[in-house]
Image (tube, rainbow over all chains, first blue to last red; front, side, top):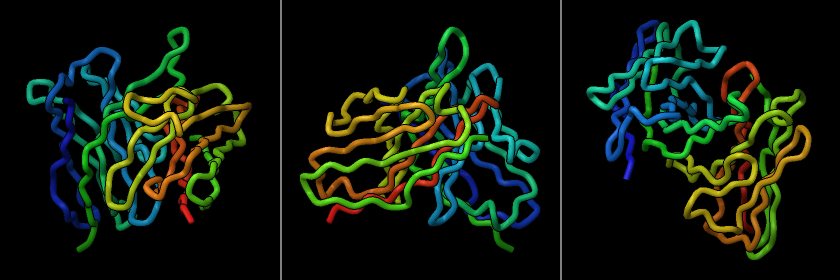
Length: 127
Length: 109
């Protein structure tokens, strides 16, 4: 059974870079037509999609975060990673990795289904 | 990016039916699929509905989804106390990004 697990520091200083890794087990990260996503949730607030990556390295990012986000994949380690630069207190959140199963209509993406999630990891931005 | 609007809260009694709406002012819902997620406090969200009205394996048929125009609806029938959770809609944006609604807290009275 496919499982995802997030890892990384729980505390990051303002202006520094947040780095998290998601390890995929029980299945292949190199699955056709499957992307891998990062999603976050500030305390007491809703979900925010950060971005998604394909095993070949192609990415989609949230336009509001695009200037600060990099998502990379390492298929040999069955991992994909998030880097969010110049963090502030507003980046304090639970960060989830998830499997992203897109839907297509005549070759155009028309939907997403985040069907398998990691347990999440809380990251606090504070000095 | 899409702005999806959900009611902050809904409530109903056990055994009853509840509907949760998800609306959008632009055309993204109309042109794209909607998904729904259930989240209990302190846990990761769980996919309930994808592609507007499809249920993943293991999701009871008490949960159903529909879409009309620029609005989508999650319907839960035969409410149980264990359904008390936060529910989020999500969609794909024509600008190549995913977005979620603000979430709806379901209270089972």
